[in-house]
Length: 319
Image (tube, rainbow, N blue to C red):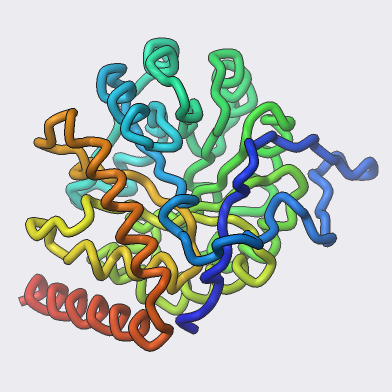
């Protein structure tokens, strides 16, 4: 288990969104069962996870976007997900975005090297029109949250139509159980596992428990087996002793699962002077590389340590 997908990752060449293919009989996105070269594992320096790890930051603040861009964050942009999220996550203490489409031009204008990213709303009647507006604003990567079916995912990919990279945010047990089908949708580029909503669907109170769940491990193994790029959850600052769960144990799960991307958590840059942003990003990449170079046995130990901490924390919370 621990050695799954240690060499999996995102392409090192500049990313280009691929053309859309549609089955002529049904109009549904075609399913491609052939090997897709853009998802091939790296042939050189396979263990250098940190350098090829994709960091994504949600923000509607141009100043923070510009600073994160200069610090080396790969993808930056607003989080527009609002539909149904407050109702789903009520009482969890999670952040609900107040970003709007009006934020896109100023945030995107602040970026240099980083890709222009946006998370849209979940599937809804006017999603195609929403995507048209996002593409018109210059979005290069679009993430679809909280979908339930392969059909909904396919409609999203078809709406983007190769004009931006497409990312599915897997947040339900039903979606996680179908990643083998999802990764075959022609035109889909990446999958990201969202831990907050997955913890809700699994009925666990701590989203870190999802990192040790067989559901996530099996889904990641399915994607790693076909070299399909995927990301998991989010990360805080490396070696940050103030976090409720040691960041080292969280970082260790990425090479264990074969993931090569994560969100930058809200606490990553919190109370950190801008001149230290680049050093914090570099340190995170260094620690990811460190863990990718550890033995399968050490990665299993880190999983067991994390699992024990999560179980103990949930036991205390239930008293």
